Length: 439
Image (tube, rainbow, N blue to C red; front, side, top):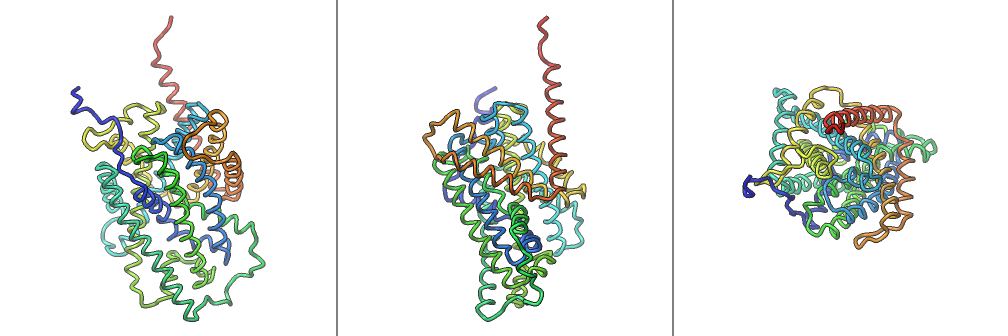
């Protein structure tokens, strides 16, 4: 085949540090903060801000581990490639990649249903399934066009969703400065809220911090990745964490925990209480863009994850081919779309939301363990480095939060693991059946 028409061999490097930080902030500040604040308030009450702070600290230690791993191995594939380099075991790497892939798909499907719900508030006549199909079509097109277009849409959506959080901060601050306060008569007894409740809230709040690890998955598309990837991870997490803590503290000052926990749109209710004249339609549109942005970034992550695993030899080489003109892993879309659409239309995804954080925490444990093994085997590193104690503490903190997650999420995580193991056995049997005979 002519080289001019062959598929491209490498991804385009289009990310500088500012756009990469925006990419990370946009991924972290996705739909999570608009949905989970109320549920966390139901667990940790007026200490909801402490749950966010605890989750941020846990995420920060793992982020430092990711920063060194991203500096050592600036390529697509993320956690699956890290585990493969540490344990040198194909089946474990494939399993981790599968679980990360499932997390992205479930998140995409859940977000698409949320998007359909918000959209139906404007145009109730359009069926939800048609909205879901249209959304995935748009996301697939943007992803196919390339990271330049995806990044441009991400920057726009990030600006919109951040403006929503700034609105919450502004109207809440004005409300409190004017003498407003939550009704103390229905605030739960402060003594009844202990560190166990804060930890349970932190296990749920951790969902809102998911996203910083996605920066590693686009490392091959970053200019000077050894320098920019670690900085982008830490800057994005710091910015998002500061916003979360401030927003959650203000929210609990405007609404009491029981009101916040009962709300299906907690931040919208905060704005309503703080400034009743604020147009509600504005916040609905902001929520649509927040959901769209998170779904896009999940799509990009799932696509690059399959591509990276293929290039590592963990999956079929067919998935590692790039489009000859767009230099995007277009074949991965053919795998992602049907599965995500099926999940979105199945109507069984509501109870899967809590499993996302559990799966991520389990994979983060493997990431930190991988760094410990890699640092022992390859102590020299010219890029970003952290002391041994950092991944050790991160591993311990992730295990603690994992223990505080719900039992149902543990069961579902085991189901995903079982499916992954079955696929691995099928793949091994298929390969064994195609080996040449030696007798």
